[in-house]
Amino acid sequence: MSRPKIIVTRRWHPEVEAVLTERFDTTLNEDDHSMSVAELQDALQSADAVLPTVCDKVNAEVLGADNIRAKILGSNGVGFNHIDLDAARAAGLTVTNTPEVLTDCTADLALTLLLMVARRAGEGERHLRNGEWTGWRPTHMMGTSVTGKTLGLVGMGRIARAVAARAAHGFGMKIVFHDPFPPRAEDIEGLDATQCGSPEEVFARSDFVSLHCPGGADTYHLIGADAFAAMKPGAFLINTARGDVVDEAALVTALQNGDIAGAGLDVFEQEPSVSPALLEMENVVLLPHLGSATQETRKAMGMRVVENIEAFFSGETPRDKLV
Ligand code: DGY
Image (cartoon, rainbow, N blue to C red):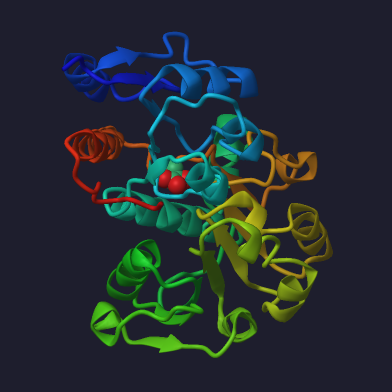
């Protein structure tokens, strides 16, 4: 039997691309450009599997193409709000994602943002590089202590729990959380985490609020003006989840009004665009969606896609099947 034809929508970790090329009839995106709707449709019409990433909008328009040949979308990433799952199902496609392998990496980055924004690390580095540092003095760049503070988690899935473990065991933080689908008791054992009855209770109790809910219609603008009003004035918002969970305009207003103390953001509502006002603010740490961006994790994510599509083409149910 001939090898399945695979189209990969962006450049992937080189070792994963080598495996894909060896095992499948693979077309790579040599110049790593972002594919248009027409290119994604063409990929679906000409390959047995299309391997998108979280930056490809595989929406109803893309999936509405005529004569789709592809049978599986092996998405590289854990989030799947970029894929219209109903439209994929209607088009007869199986869809998989890459859970678990990026949990630690993303949790590390949430803590990076938390520490950076609390301790004014981005601001301090800019200050030093700009030649503005005149030396140590007792009042210079005083930030906010992290140890012993309360961390509020919105969503208590794998990544949130990994953040909680780091924060509780590394920094002695108290953990409060809300999740409409609460974790099993054994999954939060040892974290001394307090479950709140609503997101509002999390906002009111936390010194740091870190977002770990999925993106999509159910969580769109979950963090807006009301949420900022409910947070402590000295609170910091950390977002490594999805940009549109936060109403970015309301965040700008809250920061300008001093309703919260700062924000650490890895994701944005209109990536790769960032609200210009945020770029001007010293109390905001901004990263370009780096949550899973380590050599080890990107390789593991790619290999998880390989595992999923190999299972599919062997007639088995892929481990990470979403639809
Ligand atoms: C994901 O996997 O959903 C991240 O946003 C990218 O690593």
